[in-house]
Each structure stands twice: as structure tokens, then as C-alpha cells.
Length: 179
Image (cartoon, rainbow, N blue to C red):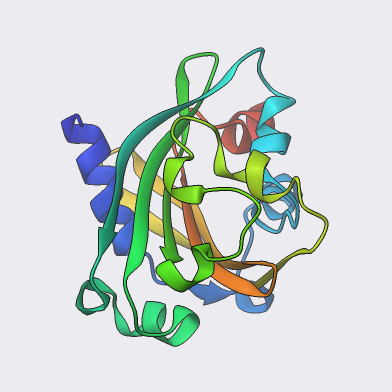
């Protein structure tokens, strides 16, 4: 993991999450991206030839490693912590951090622990009973300026996971606005 990625991961943990009703979206395009209810991976695929994943971390963490908000949204228990960078045509677009409670992995039609370099959204949203709630958005200051982020809880077969995504400087959310 390079220094920039480490700094982005640290920044993602520092986001001041806000309700989207109270958030001042910079543009309608950014609002559309941040409030996307379907698979962000599917949306990203429209902007590149090849969507790829750099898997940075994929290990279980104890409940003590979760912050209060994470415990409130997921419950207290061990979670698989998955950290990735989603890339469009080899360009880093999204830094993702997902917490999947161990209890949420039981009885699923797929093994999320062995997701590897497949985008999580492609697997999760292949099911029809997926819901998103607890959506929050925010800005975070980085060495590259202020970046947008979102966090939401996904439910698969009535079992939760928490996904946080930082939109990196080269992400289409920003470039679309400049065109």
C-alpha cells in the first residue's frame, strides 16, 4: 500500500458524515453519484473499458476495533474488513472500506470473504433483495484538496454490511463537472 492510499484511508475515517437532506451538494451530478441506490461498480463501468480492484486488506477485526457509529449500524461482533481501490482503466477512482459482520456472512449465496479482486457491488447487487439505508455523505480534506465521500449500510438477505467510499481526485464524479 503506497503512502497516498494510506493517507486516503486515514481521511476516510475522518469524514464528518452528514444526512444527505442537509448536505450542500456542489452540483446535481455529484448529488446523483452520491445518492446512487444501485451498484456504484455498475455505474463506474459505464465510464471505462476495464473496471478493476486492488485488494488492500481482507481480514477479520474484533468488535473493539469498530467505532461507536459502526457498532450502532452493525452490532457488536467480529467483522470482515475489506479495503480496496476501484480503478477505471488503471486509474484510481474510489477507495472503499467495507465492514461485513461475521454473522452477515452466514447463509449467503456467495462467500464474501473470498471476493478477492471482484468488485463487491457486482456480487452484492446480483441479488434482488438488496436494500441500502443509513446513507450519509460528506467532504474530507486531503493533500489533494477536499474530496467527496459517502457511507451506507447495505442489506443482503436481511443481513447488514457497512460500505464507505471516498471519491478520489481522478473519479468521474469530478471530471463530469468540469466538462
